[in-house]
Image (cartoon, rainbow, N blue to C red; front, side, top):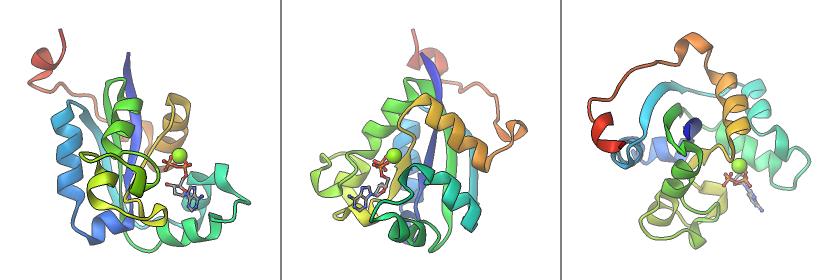
Length: 150
Ligand code: DAT
Ligand code: MG
């Protein structure tokens, strides 16, 4: 199923100069870029992004972390894009994430886990709408599409 997912490179990914590496992993896997925006989240955007975690003990730290510097907000498209992007990212807890995943290769702590990815199609749609207007989602064809798909 062709899907779109929302991925964000968190402030630690930006500060540690991992943006290119992580974007390459998503491109290499076969996903197609639909939108990218480099920004510092407003309080309102951060609260909307993490609405499902309001009231949890780690929520204040999560908001502080996500607003601590610029992030790269992105939309990616491809077959099973939501799950594929989460596989590329690895488990939420970097110390449990497998080698070869972003979190497994670059992280140790859950509170500095480098990357966010939507967990289902509905979350992806809700999250991309926080950062992008419909006109900012770009339709185009990757030249290798016919080699990635039967
Ligand atoms: P994911 O980012 O893998 O979708 P999530 O949606 O459960 O994970 O949580 C969102 C973020 O909140 C996660 O990337 C890191 C932080 N977080 C989750 N559970 C936590 C915990 N028990 N302690 C500290 N931070 C936590
Ligand atoms: Mg999540």
